[in-house]
Image 1 (cartoon, helix red, strand yellow):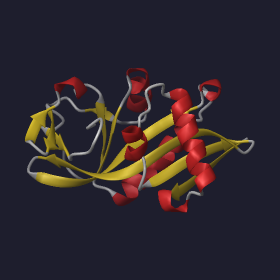
Image 2 (cartoon, helix red, strand yellow):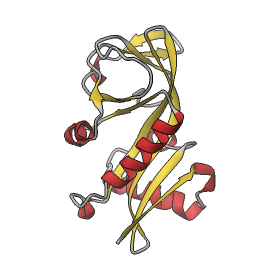
Image 3 (cartoon, one colour):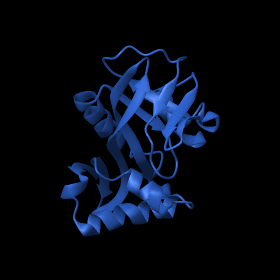
Length: 176
């Protein structure tokens, strides 16, 4: 039977952090240092089966700008389920935990979905952002059209115009 644990990055022992990183590296061929860093500093949802880590999702805080407001956003990163454990609900458990964190502490939830995960996120009530996407960079606002169709939001108490502009804060690596 699988067990779910949630903990802040600061509460994860080095062995658990390394297990998460190893699982991500195993499942994502192109996992870079920046991708790893994007998932740190927030709340992790860990799924273990027989003591072995088989699933993970992290919620980190970001600021997204929309309709003249800076929204405190729970941004979901590093979602993964070990390949041989997929299709058994092990992805739903960390996502449900991350959604509870988002609903309990943020105005908005967001993530950037891989093509093969779009249906999964949509089935969980995430809505695709239809409007233009922009990033605040050190050189000013820069449109990010390559990410359009991949950003999904979990609406909260703030009214959203899904056809309006959504702007993310700057970070190294993938902006969304």
